[in-house]
Image 1 (spheres, rainbow, N blue to C red):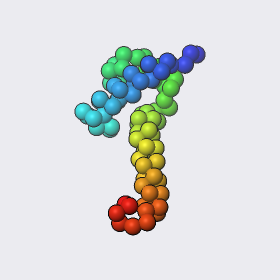
Image 2: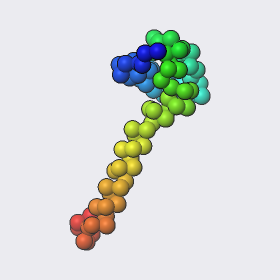
Image 3: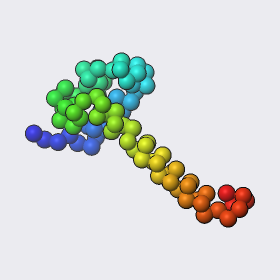
Image 4: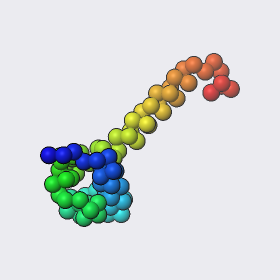
Length: 86
């Protein structure tokens, strides 16, 4: 069984994001997602266990970036010597 290419994975993520923004996460079926991404259902399940895993894959980069930004802000606040340094 071959792995999906990075382009195929990106296409699935883009299609899922577009559909979920338009219809809500619960309103999107795997079948609709596969049609939008122009992939077979089996291809979807080769990379994602289910829709929840796809949502996690879409959101994870955002949550990681937010966590990093908050840690950086906390460090800057702690290091600031006075109000003007903030």
